[in-house]
Picture 1 (cartoon, rainbow, N blue to C red):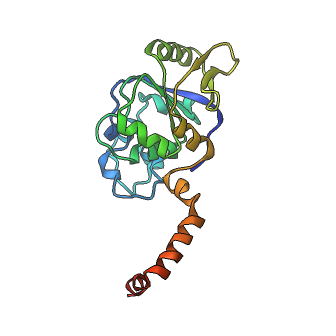
Picture 2: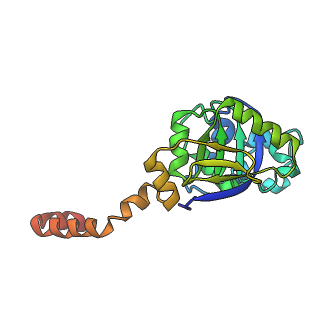
Picture 3: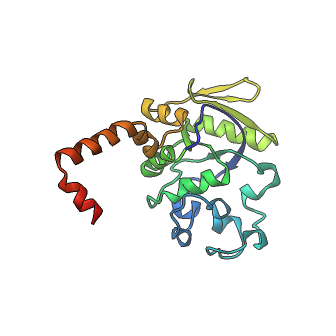
Amino acid sequence: MQSLTVHRGLVAALDRANVDTDAIIPKQFLKSIKRSGFGPNLFDEWRYLDHGEPGMDNSRRPLNPDFALNQPRFKGASVLLARKNFGCGSSREHAPWALEDFGFRVLIAPSYADIFFNNCFKNGVLPIRLSEADVDWLFHQVNGFVGFELVIDLPQQIVSTSDGSRSFPFEIDDFRKYCLTNGLDEIGLTLRHADRIREFEARRLVEQPWLGQMLST
């Protein structure tokens, strides 16, 4: 998992509340568990004018000109600004996979669905909670200034405008902060103890040699 410490990125604004995971990545794309390749189908039913299916050439599909993320000004955005209860609905982990694969490293919203919120941290995406008033202010800035960027300092737990004129502190659990800043998902955390795991397995085979016979059959 890619680490995240200080991130500066273009902000894209999705001015919708209660965006559920089926909107983030529709159900027909859940057949794959590769954790990659979902970016072209992020918000598929909103981004395109036709119905999407796995294996389609998305470069040939008609884009919806009214969908916010299709605006040229948001090309290359890595920070997504949204409204309350983002990520509600089913618990599919494909939702943060699609967001990360599209290029979003940071989400900012007043609130998130709990399971989606937890899944983001496990997949290298930082979901930040700010007050509705602060989110409103950020929406005004994004709408008023093309190229609006934010700087997210995870160690200091601060979101700042690119010129430093305004900043917003945010809260994050210490363990989640540690994992994100060090690029550790659950597998990475386990592999830190690889030597101890190997020692345990070797000792167990000495103490219980019959296990080795079971494993070889």
